[in-house]
Image: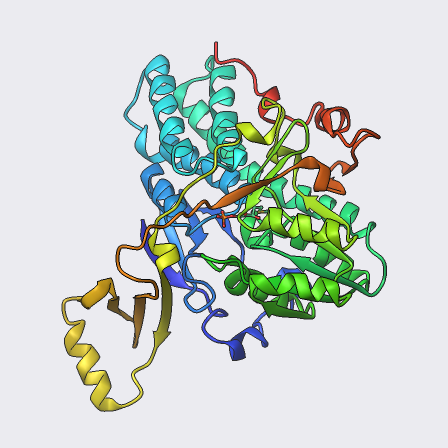
Length: 438
Ligand code: MRU
């Protein structure tokens, strides 16, 4: 995987308020992931908004690396990344396979590698396995034809995802009144999808309809997707918002500052139990206590009808460094000629890594005429035991409605989504409908 270039908007706040295009609203947000000149391109979200590199992945390993490092993240974007990862393998790495069964066997291993990168978002499995089913269904083609079909299908999935999110946004906006004050958690925005977003898709659509007064953005410890990505997207789209720390939501609700909570999802079980970014369950309980509707916005590809309840959803545990320290990145010009000479000397061999006591780290590298700094600073005591689950499961009873691209799903009188969700997902091509590999 290589750094391709740097997008022009994310460097600092002043550039964000004056985007260089004539687009408006959400259309100002950079694309998340796409296919270009035979490789996968994606904007590196691990450093946004202060550094906006576009990464180029020529192999499926590059895509796996980008997923593990959270350069691409968010359930629907992971589904598209998985499909594009298989496509880049089919085109670039499988070129010398000349026998169909070998191609299918090797493709199975690639799908396995991609789906092992992160366990919770079902879209990742759905995206990769959809490609495998496509290959089995079309194994009577020649290998060059099949490779081309796989690439085309993955590219179609980018466009399909955006179209689904726009429909979802439209259905969700209909639930909101004029003057709505919304609270959201993590980033279920355009960057979490191929484009437009799910929870933020609802907010973007409602904003276009003049219904949004204000959005509260949870910073979302520990990876800060809210502070880094959601706040950035809302500002680019011109949606009024304020960033808060996660522990401020309760008092804002008590003060009457929230009319609805809208979040995304990584996996929704058949009964409506919903896995999403850690902290979502707490918000759902708070919303119930304050009589505020709690909406989950997710495409049907996030619904996993193969599992009965949230107890079966695997929850990813992540690196302890996310909790014990803070990460920062920036591209800066050295303020003086003397400092330019110092950084020039340090980066003569391309980059320089400082390792300080207690694990603090600083990596300096060249970025054109500027320098890129990537740092990690410890805030917790050395060797403190840590627990870092990346997601939690909100029981269905706390979810007012699930907003999908096909419409809004509500529970039945007993509070169960079992029937309504199954009916809404019928014929959607979700996990449970992928064909058999025979
Ligand atoms: O760990 P992340 O950043 O991949 O987690 C993302 C979330 O939890 C999102 O809310 C979810 O994937 C829905 S994105 C439309």
